[in-house]
Image (cartoon, rainbow, N blue to C red; front, side, top):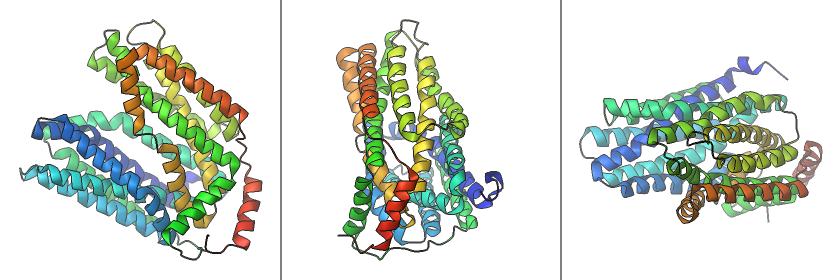
Length: 412
């Protein structure tokens, strides 16, 4: 098992860097639309800036996975976060100078999004390199808790900093990325050993996709995640609509949505103690999501959705930690960066559609009916998942990996 995780200096440096940078990202998540609206008088440009970041992240995700497997993962993490620090610093200068050039915001948001595409798989592979396999569930639980805590603390702190000055959240975010880069440098992530021969990029990606395709249980797990991200994300705007339909204020909407952060933090504390197999846990959590959506429609007042929404959020860390640790343990070392990119892309490819779908449903039939539909579809997904093959035994996967490495050639 090695040293306890709390004494694993390399992991703790990675964790601190990730926690600080994620908090910084949340600082600007809400400051961005406020700033762009103040500058342009239109939320459209706020959407363009946000869209530029999302598009850059999505487009860079798969190439980043390939390059993380080819390059030194520690340096990839260091330089990607340094680039993000520069991008946020340029945004801050754009504000302080009074230029407020929207094109600069769009370009730098794209740089920051691309940096995230590289930093994600680099961090995942780095964690596998410094954490023993038996401690991976606890390590990923800490990673998950970090994200939910940042989502709780970041927005109000970002609003406070924005009140002190329009550039302040962006300066703070730049500093957090710089701190993360320093932490990555001092973590001294070991270089990868046993790398596969370099191939053309499409061959590298083909190798990763084929590996996933031949792991039937894991492939089905990723498919369930795809549906969960679509239906779970789609239910958020109907939840807001439901609170407003019942006469809730904007402040109450914020309080209700805070239930997701509360549930996420609590779920992260429980996740390392859950011993259910990832497949069974995924079925149970999918059913929990569906029942939570249905429960939100009960006529208990505008405040009521916070209760099932908190329960809903409890399940998210459970499956993220369980499946994340499983994938990290199963995937061969030479495929880690690509597989992180492949599974993330496959599971989230429809995520940008989710809010549009949710908004359309809320407008068409109202928040309550939309939630009934999404909840019912999630329950159907749970039934289908229960009938599917979600077995992901490490032993058999390790044998497959060994066989693949014995006669591995450039993919084709």
